[in-house]
Image 1: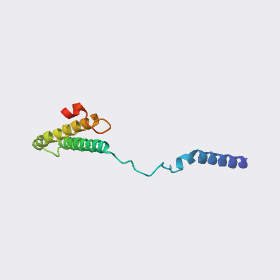
Image 2 (image 1 turned 45 degrees about the horizontal axis):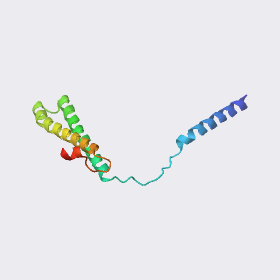
Image 3 (image 1 turned 135 degrees about the horizontal axis):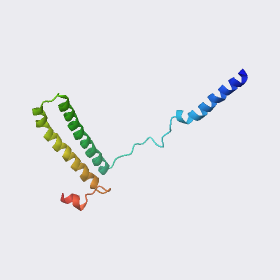
Image 4 (image 1 turned 180 degrees about the horizontal axis):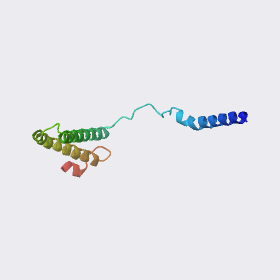
Length: 112
């Protein structure tokens, strides 16, 4: 009886190891080389980062005002500037995204 118990436990451990082995191995990358960004990709990334910074600053200001860490007067003095910065960053990101893949401006983007 105990022999069968030991064999069953050994079989269970073996099955767990076989099933878990693919998850325990470190995946090997195809290449360690980083993708070099071209000018259009770099411009898009910079526009996205500017948008993220502007929206994060606006969100932080709103949270500080709601928590009472910033007075109403200070809030009113700063919120307009941050909203303009966020709107400008969003417009720039829209402009960059409207550009074709080659990085040249479209006719509608040139006239804007």
